[in-house]
Length: 440
Image (cartoon, rainbow, N blue to C red; front, side, top):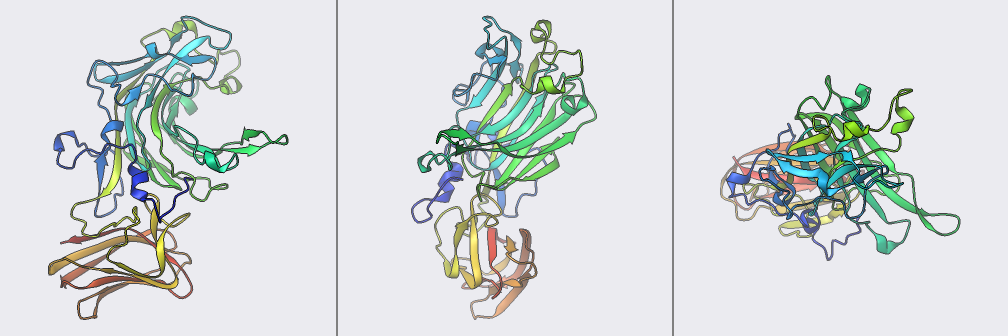
């Protein structure tokens, strides 16, 4: 969890920090996400240009990527070597090889590409053909540095989202044909001597079994990192699993910036699952065989969810501290478990409270209001009302779901000067997020 103050920090800055979003006017660079996503009404996916690449050149784009990981040389016995990274024929190539200078620690070589830019939340996809060796093919997000180091050992941590882990040349389909996805919260604790040591990971994941080896053809692997507690994973454009991440130590565990990584590595547990009498790592011949030793990345694309220009509400996703046009009673922008549908923050209305949004500057006409809401208690009968300029209720709807649920109201002949009112029941708080107010 990244500690933030709404009095002084714009939440939107944390979401977009380090991102270079493609201009909405530059249509030549915009390719929509390849997966079937339940994109909220009134929102769009905007390309993060400095975290996306079609690999159409002849060398790695050094403005976006490194041919190594600055903080990790690789898990023995495989060291990451820059020579095992290349760009050719419209692909990023990450290879394995024998080690040119083997040592007691490193006896073979893999490859690693790490991103120079970070994002917090978004949709990330890559079209990949796995290598056919007993080293991994991977696509993942990871913290570039520990969060909350200033708060001491037991608060600092790193986070990781593994979109793909596979071993294309493994003996069984569990690793050669299966998409392994995971989330890891990497925290620390003080041991009996007072030394700061790593705690066991808090991990939750999902798997998808394909009917052929992942080294046989290209497939699309993707993740939608929705908010600090929720990640969706996709295989070939279809949702294959959803993870509500572990928050045993942190109510908003996955809310820090991460960069992308594409890696060929060895796992120290391979020796524990190998069939009897079989080698658990590639042989020297396999490591250097170009017909099997290369993972191919056709493209990597990253996207940020942003309000559309047609969305007439200001700060509609509550990712800034700005509450212009709002009048609040027992309500505030908040972050925490269950407070937001997307990204960091949502509008939290405490029991018996209400929030009104003044519809200033709109023209008479037909409109649609869309939003997500959840009540702290099921069937708590919160409500939304649309009030016209004369104080009359034009439309209303009860909000009873205790999981974030989409709601829509169609408004006919709405006149300027009206307002939207959200009301919490006397017995339960309600959270509102990801609003859109659009002209029909």
